[in-house]
Image: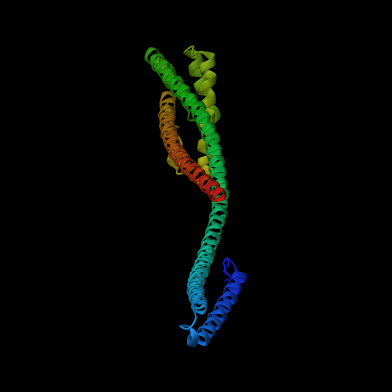
Length: 305
């Protein structure tokens, strides 16, 4: 008897298994023929009976081996089928995963590009806001310097006029007849300045203050003339042109105080407007800087993912 053993691990093994099963079938058929030929004499001779017994045992052994090989073949076929199905499932799973990863990469690439555009826009907005804040600060500093200079001049003029009026009033109280004859009725601006100088000289008004007063009077007169050219109403000129010198100076003092009040009001408004603009620009800068930091973080995350 010959034992048949086939190793089933490949398509070649399947072919061998099939050949082995065919061999078993042939051997089984041959054994059956021999058994049928010898059945007539089975009981007449003991040696022949022994042969028949051996052949029966061989037949049983061959059948058993055939059944084992068939079982192995079926098991291998099932394994191949399962492996094929699992492989196909793995391929489909990997294909789906590749598609998902590709879509994710495309999305992250788009996010990075969008973040780059936003970062560029925010950088431009920040630069613009910084420039606007810088320019506004420079303008405000100049306005503040101009205000302080003009305020100082007007305060000095008001003080000088106030002291001049006080001195003239005292002098008029001492000698009203002499000073009452001095007026601004003649020679226009030149006559008024000359009259003021005459009175202040007589009253021993300090020379430096007298120069300041004359400069202020001339500047006010020039401003009134400019208003007249631009169509300002006649009331803009001094109401005391025909009055005595004290009334003219009091009129100038009143106007200087009005200008000082208007100047301070304008300064308050300008300062308030600057503070509002500054706060707005600073808030915008803070918000844009925060957004830029977030966009940079988002871009870095998209590029690293």
